[in-house]
Image 1 (cartoon, one colour):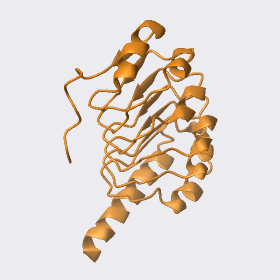
Image 2 (cartoon, rainbow, N blue to C red):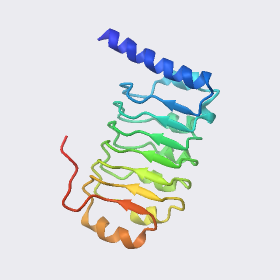
Image 3 (tube, one colour):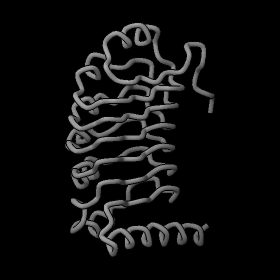
Image 4 (tube, rainbow, N blue to C red):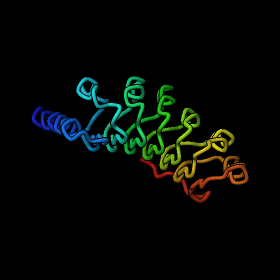
Length: 184
């Protein structure tokens, strides 16, 4: 077990070093078995955090992200968090004013993360395969850049299914009414 943990830590360190050394705009920590975002990474990336535009933390074991994560990486354009155990976002997600795409699919959201509706550049929201019943249709309709929201495999209420189509000017992807998210 210690050997596997050591390998996981080494993998994260290697990926972070690659980002710093290559001055990359991407930090890819997918499939690293992370249960939280490592605090030490903030220090290592402090001189390049403004240059990072894409962070992938997909397929880890994250239950939450901190406000520090959101404020440190405020220049993000894309955030990929699919396949974790997230059920909410910190309010500071509103500091991601340049964010264009967020993937929160295959998480544990029961409530739509309404802070996303305050992001002026957001074009794509993927919330496929969560447990969302209600959606703030009016707030989504007011988002200036939103083009696509994926809500497939969510147990959306009949009200959302009826109210949304006439109000929205973007693509709202939903599963057929009789399809529900697969049981874990």
